Each structure stands twice: as C-alpha cells, then as structure tokens.
Image (cartoon, rainbow, N blue to C red; front, top):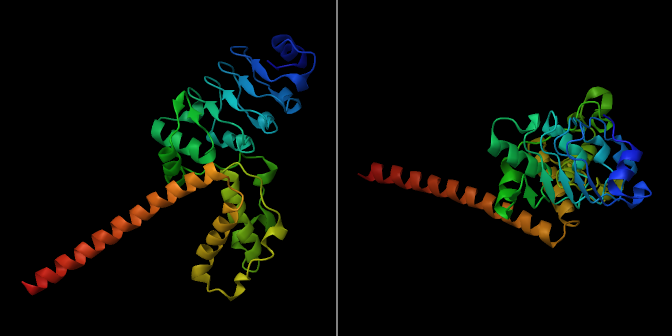
Length: 260
C-alpha cells in the first residue's frame, strides 16, 4: 500500500505536508513511503508494523529526531545509509526486521557505527562507551546497491587504487569518516592546503592520509562529538598500553630464563 498525501493529511489533521511534524502510521500495511521526500519538516515518525523495505525516501527529512520502524521488511543494514544525513536523529527503533540478523551484539554495534549520534536504539539507552566501541568494532555499512553514490569512478577502480591521484584518496578517507558520523562530505578545495603526498613513501602513505583525514574532521565536530572521539581514543590507547606491557613482560621473562 502506498502512503498518499490524502492519508497523511487525514492522520495528521493538517492542511499541508510541510506543516506535519508528527505522524503515526502504525500497522497500515505500507510498502511505499515515497511521500516523505515531500515532508522535510517531519520530526517524529512512527512506521512500525508495516511492510517497508527501503528508507531512501527519508534521506531528506533533516528535522527527524525519532523514527520507529519495528517489524517491517528492511532487508539489510545498508538501508541505514539513507539515515546518515539526519543529524538530529536521536531515537531509532529497528528491532524485528530481517536486517537485524541473529547476532544482537554485532547488529547493535553496526547500527551505532553507522549512526553514532543515536541516544536510544530499540528502546535501550546508548552509552558513550558503547559508541566508542562501535566506532572501533562495528561493521562498516555500505551504500545500498543501485545508489548513484555507490558507483566507482576511474573505469570501475576506486580512487584509492589510482596511483597518480593521492589527493582523491585523501578526500575519500576523510569523507568516509564524515559519512559515518552523518556529516556532509568536504569539497575538493578543502584539501588544497595539504602537502602533496607524492614525496611520501608508499608504505606510510595510507596512514598519513588517514591522519590528515581525522585532523580535518575534528575541526567540524562539536563538544559532544569530540567527547566521543576522546573516549574512543582513550580506549584505543589502553589497547596499545596492554600490548606493550605484555611485550615487556615477555622480554623480562626471557632474560630471567637466560640468567638462570
């Protein structure tokens, strides 16, 4: 069933789509929600218990803060890519969809890596520690097949594989991180001030680009987002500290064995 303008206005008791802020379409047997491409002002949307399989129509609902999609037909978590531009989205209920899979922990980490601004997922509060863990261990969500942004340039080869275009590689790394945080990609001129990587040795090129990308990204983060990055960094440093400690202990043990 297609959600129509007439049905939306009747349920919301409104005179025009632009004025609709909240809408409840629970259990309406919906399959087509393309009408939301005309509703940028929607803030709270309930679409649970329907037959919705695509979230592409929601990509322009930039005011959306709460979205309820429980018990639909969302096939894969790739559909969440359409929600990345929604920087105000704080509550998402996605449980009981095919995309949730059989591993609840992996599912949750993957959703939070894709949408790290969420404060509540499936009626469970999201913690800062959980976000930090998701950014490190959650699976990366790819853009759904058929999306124009998923097409590869350079005759089917990604920019990162084009030897003479390191600048594009740097842009790709930066915008990849920004996309995961629901931020708009940077334009090419943002990278003009970076030093040319052509003089760098190939083994260190990728890590250098990633560092540049992270440093550029930090400039656009607000206090809350910087705090998440800080927590993730601390957790990562603790991992290195533990590894270093184990190495030192191992060396000490070998020395003691030789002496005895």
